[in-house]
Figure 1 (tube, rainbow, N blue to C red):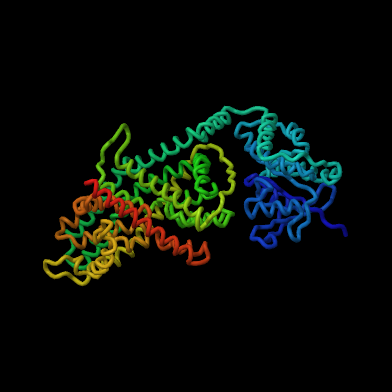
Figure 2 (figure 1 turned 90 degrees about the vertical axis):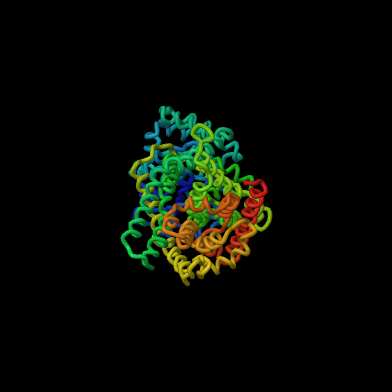
Length: 614
């Protein structure tokens, strides 16, 4: 019995290889891992028009045979017959995305240059037509020197023609001749020339999109547009959210007043007003800021601009020794560091991945926004410093930039010391521009708002209740401060010795302990502490921002902001870092350097602000 021949599907990621594989093999497929690696191996049987049975392999997506990841390493070894237990494929089916022709032709030339029997599946031809591209498959076949079959895998279009071309490739394998090898630059130039000859016409939409990319990806204009957009976002977070935040604040105050008016004084009323409403309510009022911030992020993702932002940031990240692959995990960390750290699994270089994990907590996650918002509202005047430019939004923008700059500086130091290594290459495929769907935006906003509210009703609520109990017992004697008499006050006194030199008072010293559960708890802790220690109900009902403005100095407020720019993330983040690094060594290192950086930065901010007479 003759050995069954093999056919391998190769191509860039997102070219539609898996869809093509599934349609060709149907249920006749098996899934396992390649020997020695945790990369999925998919194989299946197909029958060719001649009646021959062949084994079809779906290889991982690759941008080049110069492997930069475990996936690409597997593809290279299989194609060259170096993979353990896998002989060299008899025919290569090169899958190309018709809508991204120029980019996919770069790797196509490297595959065809091997001189192996090759068939090109010009896949997703329907999407290219939808985008206004008219292609000439015959011209592409002449340019590449191999058969080209237009396909739409998900609709089974062109599959019979593809099977016939594979059948013919077996018969003609002895006349295939290797081509001269080109370097990466030469292949890119050749890909551009081939694409120009194959694309017969472009619609106005495609021309407009190309023009937008020339502006948005311009090395000079692109970063200016990106940072200008970020500046607008942070202006909007304050300017647009204020009416809604005031309404929520008013509702919380009305609820507290109603309880005071209708309940007899006692422990239950104090718990509801000082613990629940003053604590949890002080965080919930920042829901509008959270929603507005994520609305902009979702819009950037849905329109296709977010990938362009990643491309622009890749240049900056390469200068500090990071791969462009680190950008997406760091970008995810702006929402929460936990998914950001988990997303580092896509980074192939171990030291690159470790560095990304260690700096992910420096990205300003959404949990910090309530902390920033309440301090800015209390100490930064709501004034305009130019047309459409508010001082509060400018300060928020500076805080986010400070986190990014801090992360880049730390990455530069780490990559030259404990995680020393060179940055690896990065290739990114740009998605098409498209109008966002309102339904998708609404669902995304609801999910993120629900996550925020769920944290307020679980983690923040639990931490606030515990803090309220510690603040409320034992009861103070007449004329004695409740904070001084409480268990929490004793804890704060011990920590205050360490934090007093950087300008922190006892209330701040107490608040940063439960903030390790979640960043937002710092706001709830301050609100509960001042509510419990209030001299009368009028002071208790006073808004947190007004309370802080009356009791803190400006240098203390600035030091508090500086602390939260660099302070360690929540305990859940530390736990995820331990799991992703398989031990406590690097999470403990992360905690140590973040605490040291936060302490020194807060101290420097306080001392400089005090020296300047602020």
